[in-house]
Image (cartoon, rainbow, N blue to C red; front, side, top):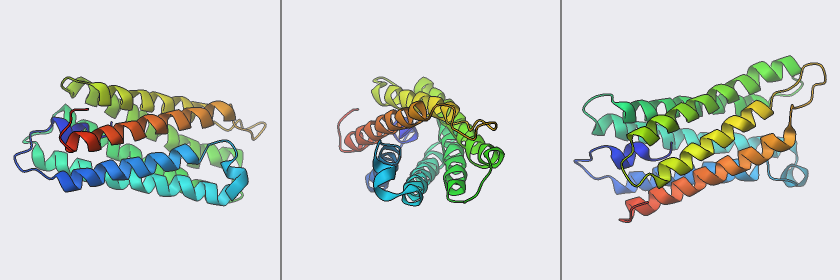
Length: 205
C-alpha cells in the first residue's frame, strides 16, 4: 500500500522532499491508529478524544495518499497497476475519513453505526487490501515493504469485520480482535512508512 507508487514509478524528476512528506503522513496516521485502540488509552483521554485521534489519523492518511496519487499520475505515462493501486488506496482513505468522522456523532443506534461507521470502514479496508495486492504484484524485488503493507491491510480487514455492531445487543462483535488487529495493522503501516523514508534516503527497503 504505502509508497509503492513512489518507488516503482519511473521518476524523471526527483522529488525527495515531497516523498518524505508522504512517508511522514503515513507514519503520523499510523501512530494515531496504533494509539487509538491501545488498551487503556480511551480510559485515559475519554471516548471523544479517542475518536478525534482516529479522525486526525485518517486525515494524515488521506493527505499522504493524495500526494502519492499525484506523484503516480505525474510520473506514469498511462494508468497501469501501480497507478490504480495508488488511486484505490486514496479512495480507501476517504472511506476512513467518513467512518472516523461519523464516530464523533452522538446518539447513534446500532443500525446507524453499522451504516455510517462500519460500512465505510469495511469499504475502506477492502480498498486498502485491493491496493496492497496490486502494489505487491507490481513491485520489483525486494518486496519487503509491499509485503509489510499487505499484512497491515489484512489486519485492518480483520479489524473491520470484528467491529460489526450486532443490532440485537448493540455491542461490537469482537472488540478485542478489532482493537488488536487495528494496532497490528497500524504497526505494519508505520514500518512501511519508515521503509519508504529510508528508501528515499538512498537505502533500499
